[in-house]
Image (tube, rainbow over all chains, first blue to last red):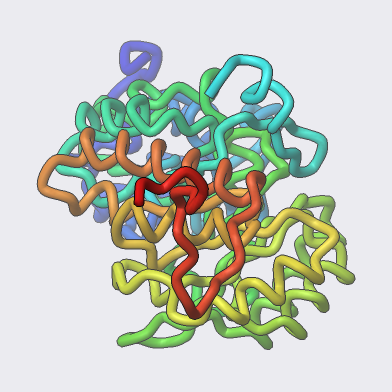
Length: 87
Length: 263
């Protein structure tokens, strides 16, 4: 899926904050985006298996069906979670 | 156990039917392989899971679902680590989106060292979750009034603690557990505190519907073998409960007949 994104991966560790058109927060860490980006493209660029994660934007659940229509903007805060072992 | 008995002795929660009365956690194992082997050996059909941030620097890392498939085991997402009602509700909304499951385990805990259930916050979270369409199995204090109130609010199961989470101390108050069980109209699971198989059997002998444990298996020297022991302990305790124990006599009563004794 990484190949689907033109240019550097938006979720990649090499994206430079200074060149960014906007920054968002993902799981507590700042990330640079080249510009407004659909959530579906961000997730694909991050290499995640979308069937196994859930996403919250600004403390609101984003249903899977809305990933493509959800445009990430400046200051957005994402939580991306999955299931791990627990008691 | 013969096949007929096993088939007849199922229990139900929120319209789902289970033959295994052992519910196990998936945490604290050395590896996902060990997790899978221990859960398989336990015979459990329902497992608790936690909801956490994905590691974006290693998105291809193996995931729990690859080892404990959700189409084989009923996932019961928990709210472990949540200390407020708001955090618990947020976590389970994410779990519902990730897995599509409404059946959840609510636990809102007080501070260390006891992580005792915070009942006011638990009531608040239970109310919000039920209003939001969740089917809530709730970890609670071994308090008959709290358990009854949670049932009346609409929780689908109440799960009083045997002893603090991860303590392995066994059942610290069997009398209160028994009174919760006797007064409940929803399934009662003894959750947390069980350390070894005899304690799981003891919980079942009190008449609870199932037992939920994690550390007792994961922290045993041989988790797979302890999983087998827990399975056998739960089955033994259930049989003993159904069979009905003999009364306690405070004097001896010989088992061999006195008639025909040689003189």
